[in-house]
Length: 283
Image (cartoon, rainbow, N blue to C red):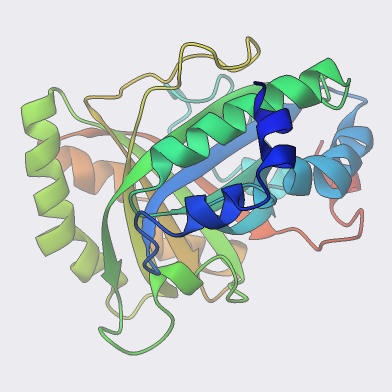
């Protein structure tokens, strides 16, 4: 019996699925995806993603409980570093970023659904092809470091709270063993110091997980699964207003620690749902 037939014949199926397994409020996993629409397709891509894919391909899925889209206008793209990035070639590639939270312990359940729905969307010609995935990965949450301790929004609020900006930072360690040291250095020393007095309210740290073998062909397999860390800095100010002194030397400080190399530091601002704001400022 096919899944759709079984669900029609068993109206209690969803109740059964919801009655077991983890369901605590908390960020267990994330989908972080940075995409570059092909030149001339900026508005069409934006409208497809915002009007259809953000919901049908993400938020309507089980256990994906929060999401937000971000954009890098041309002036924000030009702030990125390092110039030679292992993530984006050129470093300005990837003007849209989408971030989603997934409930702790529900990654496998969510992944089975997302593979199925994306196959269906592709079959029904509801996948926009004129785009390039620059950096797309499901990620496991490692730690969140807060500027103000117990005060303020928690990480599970972060994609709903009206933060003014976001900085995506990607760091590669030399080895899996060194990544564990890097994570501890970030948690205990580097991030508390950098957050103190800064416009960033929190930093969430993730490690990427491999995509399933039956993923869509246009999404490349995740690199750096054993060595990479992904950081999201949630800002209370426009990143253009605070880029110096807070974010220009992140790579230097990490390199001086001897535990990793920063491959990307990229600022974004939130999109305005239901509008084409910023589409004409991408090039």
